[in-house]
Structures are given as structure tokens and as C-alpha cells.
Length: 133
Length: 176
Image 1 (spheres, rainbow over the protein chains, first blue to last red):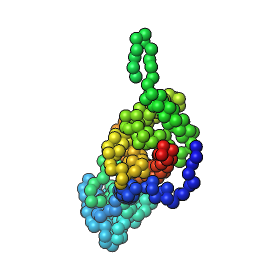
Image 2: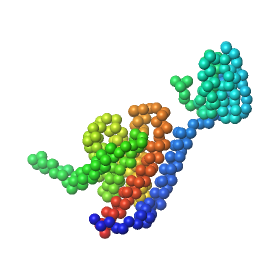
Image 3: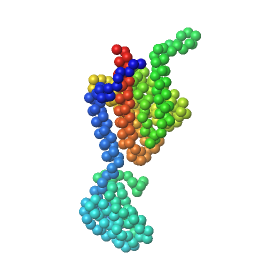
């Protein structure tokens, strides 16, 4: 079968029609939206601190603040620092919530079970986490 | 297909053509099955080149025959028949045929094989992901893979579309 001499550029130009560029552009847009919405977690806007069975306080995460939360064992210290929050100190034995370090995504939780204190970051909407199920 | 007295099945020219084209598609399907893949489900889908080519040359009816025969025969040969792999393959093929049914009506001056290939690739992975989500793993982790699948669909969609355009232009040239 005689194949015409390859002219890659002209062939490519003829193969891709104007609407094809539109289709590719739309596809790229869809992919970017998918990456953005499914890969980048939502940034948090609020910090909710619970003590025992009560909400101790709900604070904006965009501030610098140290909150002292009283529990049955003593004081749990929560630090909020411009977009992130952590438990700085806790009287509990194992220090799990302290070792968890900074939280900065909506839905993240640090729990200090012995002292019955939890710190949860909230986004614009409540997303499901293992606490709800 | 016409059945004559004496119960002799006679294959029409259409049947022969479908069988030949489906055989090519099945061959490509088998070649692809042995290619290693970085992520289960990410495949070039080179058999879809045949589906697209047939769609342009002989219409959606023949394309549907070739595509579905490829799914059934391919899964028989690979031993996937009626397994989840087969059902996924079938759902992808049906979804992309549905999209192609409408996409082939787009004005040809503006939208060529590359558009159709991309649309079919997205429909293929979309149909499969929907089925996986509804039937196999309704887990949020699937959402993390979706952008990667979509990216692969775009890349392989463009490549397959270009190959189809090249094939079509060559066979058109032969006729002239």
C-alpha cells in the first residue's frame, strides 16, 4: 500500500479541527475541577472545641489565640495560629492529641480522651468523618 | 442475516465485515491486556480506534456490533466472562457508544475524530467509575483516583483520535 510521504505538521493540523481544540479545552477544565475538588481538601474556617459533652467554644481559625480548656484532669491548652490549630499541652498520660501536631484541613480532629477535650476544624460545610459513623 | 430453507445460515457481506473488524479489535484488546499498567483501570484503549474508525466508515450500528463483540469475545479469551472485569468493560463500552451515538451528529467540519475519541474515553471511564461506585466499592477513596482516570482519558483519547484521523485520511486517499 503506497503511503504518502509523512508531513507530520500538516497532517496534525488537518487531523485536529477547530472544535477539537474546544473539546480538549473543556476536558482540561473538567480535569482541573476534578483535581481541585477531589484532591485539595477544604481549608478550615472555624475551630470547635468540646469539653465533656458540651461545646466549649467555636472560634475563627484566622487569629492568634491560646485557649485554656478545663477538663476532669486539668487544663488542656489549645493554640490557634492563623489557619491552623493544635493542642499544645494536655494532662493526659499518652499525649496522643499533642503529638498529632498542627491541624489545618476541615474535618481534622484532635482528641484528648482522658481529659474529655476535642478540637475539630470546621469548613463551610460539615463533611463526614469517622466520628459521625 | 438470512435463514434459508434447510436451516443453512448464510452470512451477509455485512456479517463478514463486522467479523473482520471485530477480530482486529479483539486482537488489539488482547495485546493491551498484557501491557503493564501503573494503575488498575488506566489503559490506552487502543481497541477503541477500531470502534471510531468503524463509526466513521460504516455508522453507529456496525460500530456497536464491533465494540460489543470485542467485549464479549475478549472476555471469553481472557477468562473474564461474567466477572466484574467483564461487567466493567461492558459498561464502559455501552457508555462510550451512547456518547458516540450523539457525538457523530456534531458538525464534521468542526469536530473530528479527536473530539469523538476524547468524549468516548471520558464516557468510558465515567460509565466504569459509576458502576464501581454503585456496585463494587462505594468508598470515598475512589474519588481520589477519579482525576487521574480523567487525565489518562484525555491523553489516550487524543492519541487514539489522532491515530483514527490518520487511518481515515489514508483509506480516503486510497479511494481517490
